[in-house]
Length: 162
Image 1 (cartoon, rainbow, N blue to C red):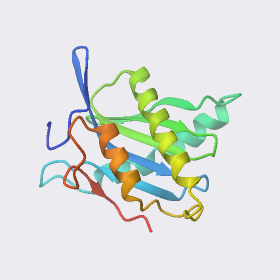
Image 2 (tube, rainbow, N blue to C red):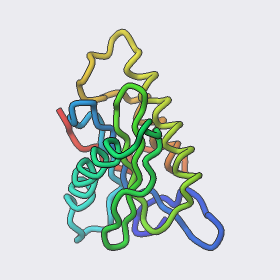
Image 3 (cartoon, rainbow, N blue to C red):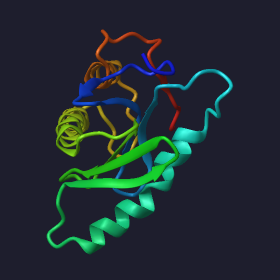
């Protein structure tokens, strides 16, 4: 653990820890936000704000690409955090924030897997489209995807988006 954030993997000489992830609907409505909190005393709203500020960059990259690539690559670096974007075929935007540098190929694979989880969730007949994802199974899958530890409710904090 680094600052209370589970280290997801070791990439060569760089340690990369996923600090937060967000699933944003096609109308830029937050569907799911997961933040692995920094130590107490740090600003709790810093990472959600960082994720939100990436939306303009995502839209800009989507307009600039013809045809658009699903993986948008790096978005904006702010202090020690790096953000990466991905847009699924359902126009759902995924944003991942890491603590430190990360290999783009690895982040792309994580985003593809997260997108698979999102698609499986929104295809559930009991899910209401464009509403926050409040599924324990989805949350557990996100925890296990971004953590080297078994999923537990104490690893991260879900922000209410509803």
